[in-house]
Image (tube, rainbow, N blue to C red):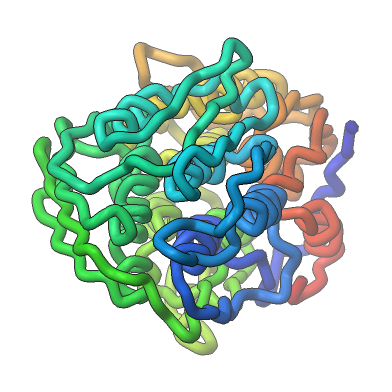
Length: 423
């Protein structure tokens, strides 16, 4: 559907309420399923996105509890559909291998998800004794049983999700020593995996993740936690920080501590470089205050926070001067080719953006209204939706893509345009 964004009648002000962290939530859901005890997840009351809902349903079908040495007690043939959720798809590939011996699971999803690269994880599970076959459709057929922990080497230059999937099932396969063959992309997401494992009482040693050849060792254990608090999602908070900077307002997000280790908190430092103010707010959250205008960000390496490519792109398009986004070539394999989709969106609004190798170069200024095709990508819809608060006449084609991570975003965006506070 097409949605015309209403530009802000006043600077965006106040606190926002966003869904719980998708990354933390999904990791906790998998570890909860691998426990023999119940874990209560304390999360935002905001409606979670489709990715979290689908993973919860899938794990309930596979388990939902650890029993007699396996995930669930049924050998029933199952099919789990993860929609567009790559994290959930990969976590379910690993989880399905924990089902009772011979239990068959077809892990599937939207055609664009099935077409994304999953071979690194499939080969790794096979190396650990698993039985995983790729169907012609791209769906994965996984047979339960056979997976045992050992020393394993893994590529991490395309996605950190392969490693996270293996590390999360490691406590139930006898432990795992994982060596990364290159410097991992999206390193903070691996650190979140370590954080959640430790919160569930699992011993973890990690070293050298900033370099090629990093190593993570996970002990054999029963994951167990009575309560796991899930922070607000930094990826859903980041658009509101950007909105404050773009409109000269002041905004913060409830339930997201300023010291959060989520990757997209990196936007706070980028906004400071561009001239926005960042300080402490109520309850220890970060507050962003917009200035008179924004300066170009210069060269920004987003290897560790690649989900920020669309937001940094639109901020740069609205700023003075030139910005260059580097280190994020792997976003060409996300829900869309994000380098091309962001460049096309900026160009559709009269801006100037081009791809040089795997860099995205934006020259700020000249923005007008126009129609942006979000290409089924929730991050594109979030970013250009926020830009529409400043640039009148922005139309989002395919705006419903936000349901993947932030179902209430379009309503919250309309409220922000009217100058309202907490959403």
